[in-house]
Structures are given as C-alpha cells and as structure tokens.
Image (cartoon, rainbow, N blue to C red; front, side):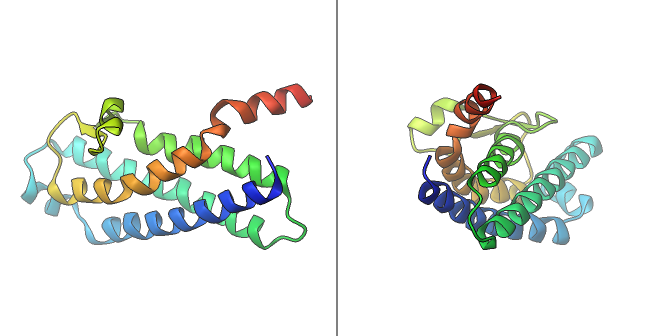
Length: 162
C-alpha cells in the first residue's frame, strides 16, 4: 500500500478511536453496577464481565490512539510502523469489539447486510450499555472495513519478507 493510503487510514482510525474512547470512558466514569441493576435484572458476574469488557476495549483503543498520534506527527512518515500499528488496532480493538473475550455479546454477520445493528446479546443487556454499543458500532464497522487488509494480507506480506 502507498504511503498516502496508509497515512489516510491512520488519520481515519485516529479520529474513530478518539470518539470511541470518549464514549467508553464517559460510560465507565458515570456507571456503577448498582445503576445497571436498576435497569436490568442480571447476575453480578455478568455486570462485572460487561464493565470489564468495556474497560479492556478502552485500554486497547487508547494504546492504538497513542500509536496513531505518534506515527502521524513523525516525519518522515514511517509506513512500516503505521502498518504494524494498524494491524494491532484491527486485532486488538476491532476484533475485540465484535467478539469480546467473555462472549456476553457476539456479531450476527447476516445483520450487516440488512443495515441493522449486528451486535446480538446472550442476555438482555441494560439499556444504557446497549446504547453505548449501538453508538460505537458504526465507528468500529468503518474501521473494520478500512483495515480488513491487515487481517491476513499484511501478515502474509511480513512473513514473505523474512
């Protein structure tokens, strides 16, 4: 990929991550398990897992954002470092959003073709959490579409160069 394409991907991802981090941190800073329990009857373990997933995604996204910020201001533009960062962002942020570690939600891939939200839940989530995920989904879908190259092609390119 050319420098211009990779640089534009870094800029797009940087903007999407910044917006997503702001939403996730806003949710985490203003939500307690007691608040979630008022919305939906669930086990305490499910609430803990749910908040843990959001914290984990926020940390991965903050690391990715920091990498994008450093790469975007470094002159000359370092394409190899940018591609490495985008590869990590795809696998740690985007994939974590669509298939979280605890499996409290999952992606219904058929929904992507119908224009509906693709995130489905194993249990009915609290409305505030569902609202957060719904607000994040379009940014993560955009990043996924932009960075799918890094799922396999980038790794193949790296292995061939060794």
